[in-house]
Image (cartoon, rainbow, N blue to C red; front, side, top):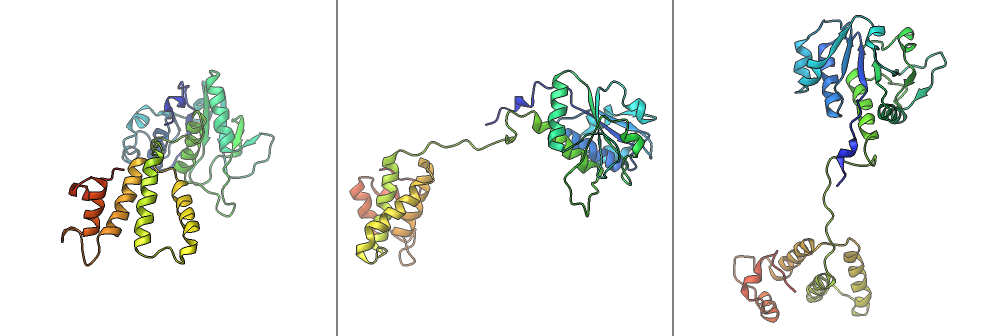
Length: 285
């Protein structure tokens, strides 16, 4: 399982700076997106509907710590105080000489600068038309998203979510890490797998599967190749043995619960397991 402490030695994440956001609901959804990926510093430049805003809190979905800690600024210049490096997000091509980065590259740059002790931020513009050129001019670099050019506009919370995700991902030991994983099982010992082979082969033989008889060796080889490839664990093989047993020993004429099929009783006697081995999950070789 990935070591999520690798998200890491927790340098301060970038401040999220919203320039003249219009709707309290959007601010709340931004706070939620920030909390999803470990960001907490929200700076608001002259929000249209004032601050604090109860609609923002309602939309934050328990990210109240982000909403409560949000700081209000009268203009963008003051909102950038204390920061060493700032990205401006935009979906439009701009005239000028600022480098333009992808979100992946920007996330890695923000992480590297934060680990170096720098304070960083990301600017997001108004819902209707984003950032103006003067505001972009206050940033160090531009970050833009690889969106469909015919529909390039992102909801502000979506844009924040994308950048917060890239920030979080850049701190993982591996960028393919996930929050949880299923433990890999140990492949079953070969004699257990052999027991499945023999059980299945006998069941298929009884039903005339191997036709014509001359092709049986090749058909058996093919079955074994299919069953060997996955590296089944012992519990998985017990499940398969149970499936085969149910198909092999029980039928509409002799359903489970309607008696004890003689073929099953004989197999149990030969295995020395007694009548108690009727459960699908109880197979011992």
